[in-house]
Amino acid sequence: MAIIVVGGSAKNVGKTTLVCGLIAALDSLRLTAVKITTDAHHGLAPIYEEKCAGPATDTARYLAAGAERAFLLTGPPERDLAEALEEFWPLIGRGANLIFESNRVMNHLNVDTCLMVRENQPEKPRFTKCLNLSTVHFVDAHVVRDAEDHAFGWEFGDDEPSCPIFHLKDFAHISDEMKGWLMKRPGLAP
Image (cartoon, rainbow, N blue to C red; front, top):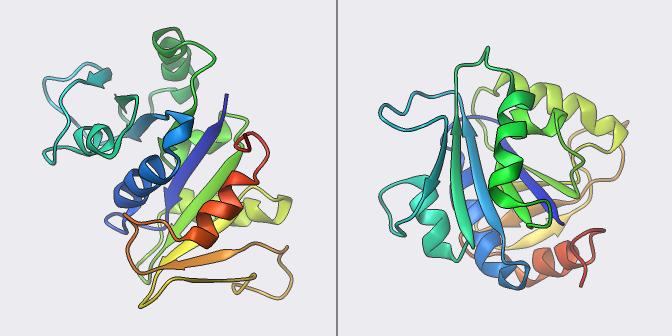
């Protein structure tokens, strides 16, 4: 079972588009995609499985990108995420390859690869916490939007561990360099 997490520094930085790009690029993994949010989604169960692919919702976009299955886990910030995940596991089976869009989930799973999307906007408190945890190799790579695809080593501070930064022109299209790096990650390699 592979587990990938995509978090981000703020809302609307491209997390969903990156998740869709990863689903398409890593199609051999047959990923099940999960969005975790505290936003209210009236009329939906706290664990909702999307059935229709398309552009209407983030989970529908996951299916359109090629996700095996797509789920939305919702609840107020005070809801215990560990409890929600315990309800979720029986729905998918323990052998599924998963990609999560969430900053919250990283404290609850043994993650194979954690990607953080960064933009020049005020950062979410959970993102800042995750970034601080990167000193113990919690964040495996950062992803930023740029005019062209390329990658660099660590750029956010001299005292931080080595961590690649992938610059992508379009988050929906993962660069060959990034895909190659991902396919060498423990838990993701064939």
